[in-house]
Amino acid sequence: MEKIIRDYKDVSVVIKKMRSRGKKIVLTSGSFDLLHIGHAQYLQKAKECGNVLVVGVDDDEKVRKRKGPNRPVVQEEERYKMLTFLTSVDYVVPKRVKDPSMHLIQTVRPDVLIISETTNHRLERIERMKEFCGEIKILPPQATTSTSAKVRKIFTQGAQDFAEKLSEKVNELLREMTT
Image (cartoon, rainbow, N blue to C red):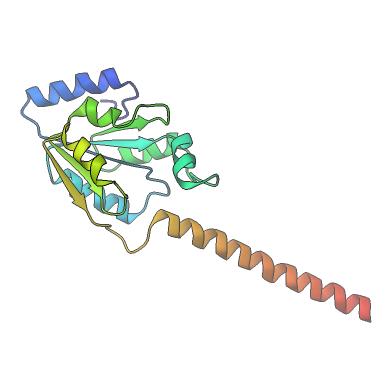
């Protein structure tokens, strides 16, 4: 069974089949860049809300638009595939920047929509989401750090290491020039 569903028409077919079997459908989405324990725990909590977990994953262009030009760190195909190895995830659906707003929510019409407390959804947007969902659950972060914080640390540490090495080389050159 293919866990990555790229065409929204195929998503509709799969969801219809699952519903005919009496399955409760749960939907969540995100970037899932630099997959970490918080992501795994979040997805496990989401799965506990139903039988079938569908995860929408932002494509690279959408991540860049939301998080900046240096993101994602991990390219979309690898992010999609990594998620398929988590036992809590039943299906992964790419969310493209060109897709209309709430297209995946309207396609899946989940019994439960899981949104992260850290995503700043306006109240009007949440009310609009309710039109397509049985219920909306807001989950708190499942880790003490975020991917963005990890990326900042990597860049900061790299810059700090570079500055130290550069300082050493400059000091060496200065010593050579003065002796």
